[in-house]
Length: 232
Image 1 (spheres, rainbow, N blue to C red):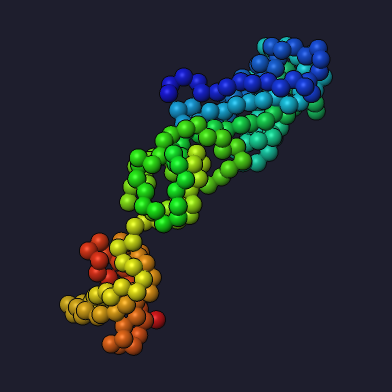
Image 2: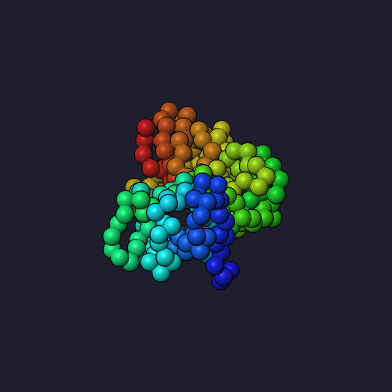
């Protein structure tokens, strides 16, 4: 999407009755432009709703407004206050406005409820514009990232999924008999044991050997074998 993905809506309930609507539009336009540095228009939609503008702006002309600056730390979201920069370089203590910043992001969401432990595929998801104003986390942005994963918890229909809510498909199951390879230089020894944890390729899990009466940590390999890390 190459067009500006910002929807400008206005709430004038708390605005001065004789405020110049053009001023409101100019201020919202500056806030929207300011937000684009944080939210690329091809992935996000930013909706700016003015909630409060002081009477001071009745004396301000459109051409006097040069831009806005967020009054706060971090990235604006939800209720936010912006200082309005005027070209006369004089900062009036009343030259700030309150706005509500609503953020929507284009994300894959489940088309139906998915139970914890279910294997996932891209076909179970569709993309939608999701309101993430009051949500945070590392959301999955590409449906292909669900391939080869299982749900780590219940995934609700229409709700975006965080990376922390997914698990990789385990190659090793807890309680399974496994072969662990202990290698030191040119010496390689195979030790039989029982996996104490599920493990996908690259995971480190605990393995107990009745033969040696010891417990180890080992890294799961793609072929289902394990490579010794250390002895517990």
